[in-house]
Image 1 (cartoon, rainbow, N blue to C red):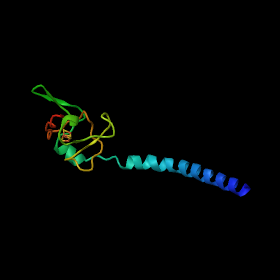
Image 2: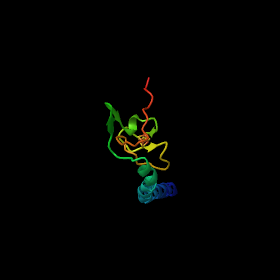
Image 3: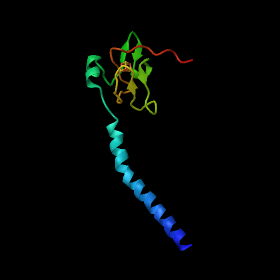
Image 4: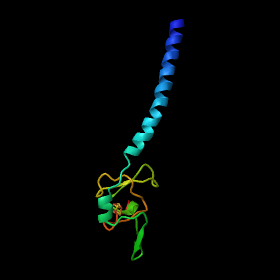
Length: 103
Ligand code: SF4
């Protein structure tokens, strides 16, 4: 009986220790995956603000190349900017093409 309690305590302490130890790793890896494709951004004149052309507001999140982030406001990606995970949903570049209308 006492051995079971000691083993249970050890298990709980191990889980707490592993949980605390993983916090910095998660923080580091979270940043490690964020990346910008500066060469393509420059080539396509990417900017973090939308552009209005002939009354149409052109934004990344209404472009057919847009790859959404976790939520509608989160940074996402773009199919023609490989490796770039920091595209602003309100951004714009010269390759903008209207996304098909949602049904
Ligand atoms: S092509 Fe340009 S406008 Fe469209 S999602 Fe990519 S970066 Fe944004």
